[in-house]
Length: 231
Image 1 (cartoon, rainbow, N blue to C red):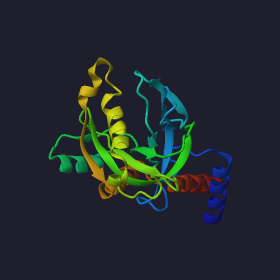
Image 2 (cartoon, rainbow, N blue to C red):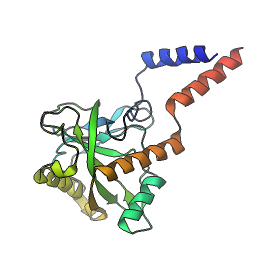
Image 3 (tube, one colour):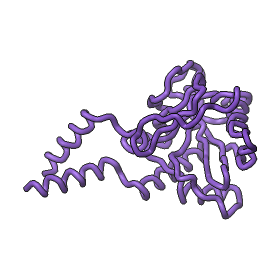
Image 4 (cartoon, rainbow, N blue to C red):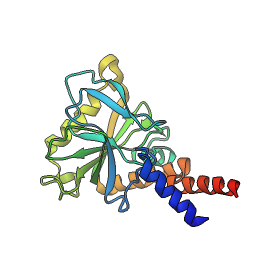
């Protein structure tokens, strides 16, 4: 039975594209090296976002202003910002009322190369992050560098990122919702280093597992149940 389930699971993976959030792994070497699913690149005038149900990339909204996403942007698969991430944000800020935003963990990936399309997977190294609070919700932005990038690839600390590059990314998140004053509810309380970024990743992975389980295990259990019914 176990061998049959494994064969069926492998056949399904070969036949169908994995869901970007649930079917792509966070990475075998996480949190030191993680996968990022890229939704938006700097040339995009539209904000794209993965539809959580279907896994397709959908149009969220046109970018409101002339400022643009200054780096590759997306999320870390099989992560979720829920109670463990919120607890960490509360501890670090001295607050008690921050909750998780119930979305995958966001990641900004820096590269010297121009990337012209999203809907891709990028292996990257977390070097730090922004502790962003949006309307009372933890909305951390992990800062990472593209693996093997000729300029950024050897960086392991946020202190190695040029200050003006970080300022540009920070400015985008503090202003991109300015229309109607929405950005008044957005704040970045801390810019943190690699160790805190890795802790946020660990906690978001735990939040995901507690809410959604493991995709491979769930598939194996479902296939086992189907095969037992046929016996």
